[in-house]
Image (cartoon, rainbow, N blue to C red; front, side, top):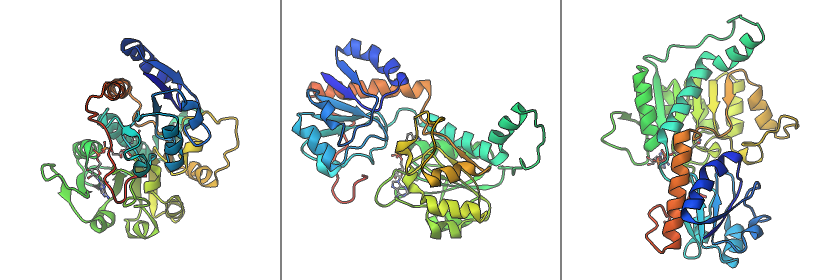
Length: 333
Ligand code: NAD
């Protein structure tokens, strides 16, 4: 097997190289992302391995197929960046569905605690010998209401963390899990009753901009919004308006709808040309992290192992248990 890895960083090689030796596979690590310009570099490879901000749209799928690539192996859970309809029957697509939901749920908790108590600001203040606590006041989370949209693997764990804080937790899911100890409510009730709203559903045509201007208007004054799922769940213009009007009291964002040109890169010597991102970063009550919620030792190990298992199953004609098949209708991406 020869596999072309796109959008790789040093930490990808650390986890994948030892496994490639075990499997006897040849890996080629590209720094750049997969897109219509770079797909040509997959020529001569059996599979491509891609991450969250690579693009496998219809054009790229066509280019990969024409070069004989047989598998798109996602080393992530979300697959909104792959055109499954274009891939159907032509190239297989597999993902890592469940590497460490705890990693993401715990990061969502870190964002919530930081945004609420402004610890991200306290950190920079005390490093500058500024020991004032003016402007850093938060609220007790205990007895407040949290609204969770999407109660899959990550959402369920986050529900339990928040219940541990003594919060009342309500939830909305397209497919509620009756076994979960949580009160399912309508989306409208979730928006009107929650002090904290956290997104844990996938990005699909149904959930695109699930947080929009109308929804923000329905929310409680001072609501804290947490998004560790996908950037395009939130209409950034609506978020900015909500922050400026103080309707939204804080936001913890691990994802951003236009993140692919920025996240994972060191741009500290550059001018940020995305005005919305620059504006978001300017708010004292907004904490942006660079799509790092997944980034724990346990998650990286599991991602590498399951990705290699997917590649092995594909190359040996075994059942590809993590294959994402096109379901028809509106598929994510
Ligand atoms: P999951 O598939 O276990 O759960 C998703 C839940 O969302 C399911 O219960 C599903 O029924 C629900 N859902 C689907 N459509 C919905 C809709 N229209 N409205 C409400 N709920 C809906 O997925 P998961 O493992 O919990 O991951 C959730 C998301 O987290 C992923 O889709 C991915 O985008 C994101 N993620 C982010 C990171 C990160 O590093 N920031 C890492 C992993 C996953």
